[in-house]
Amino acid sequence: GENVEQHPSTLSVQEGDSAVIKCTYSDSASNYFPWYKQELGKGPQLIIDIRSNVGEKKDQRIAVTLNKTAKHFSLHITETQPEDSAVYFCAASHQGAQKLVFGQGTRLTINP
Amino acid sequence: DTAVSQTPKYLVTQMGNDKSIKCEQNLGHDTMYWYKQDSKKFLKIMFSYNNKELIINETVPNRFSPKSPDKAHLNLHINSLELGDSAVYFCASSQGGASWDEQFFGPGTRLTVL
Image (tube, rainbow over the protein chains, first blue to last red):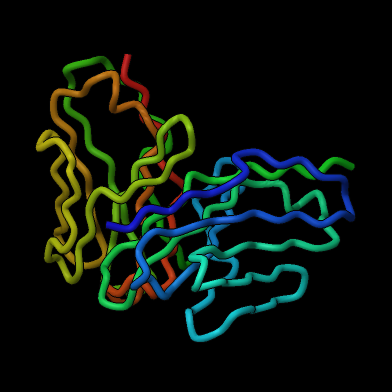
């Protein structure tokens, strides 16, 4: 089955700097890669996703890139703000699968 | 508010007890899920139901029994609670049953077994 590895487990950046979180997956059939953000005391919330027919997707300050050959994808947050502090989860699945497989999570802290 | 809601938010109980967590969604979604998040934040699916039918049943002890009285509700009953059951349990829902459908999570239930 699918296995998703996420790094780093914790990340601390200065406000205004960029943050990058990386994930690798094992199943070459996977073709859907969402990112969820979990704020303190809340459930995860989808912030961006990418399908394997594109290599990059951007939504304001966040972007996701996908390298299918290397089986890895990354989340990029630019101009970080205090409200970006949260735990971020990557996930992977393939069409027809009925579940997402999540990475271990990255705790991002934005320092003022 | 349209949302996924769970009750209770906190649950503290003794080993060996039986407890239930309730989940309701008013989004009109067809599929509901239960996830377990351990102390290291690892998020793992336990069950999913689509229109009251069990779709996913991961390797979960049979002390855990989900029940879906209708497609808007998915409750989780846990028998003979053990220390290792301590975790945050999240309910989620999605429009369809495909993994590509956005999942909407509830606020979580923090279960502590003493």
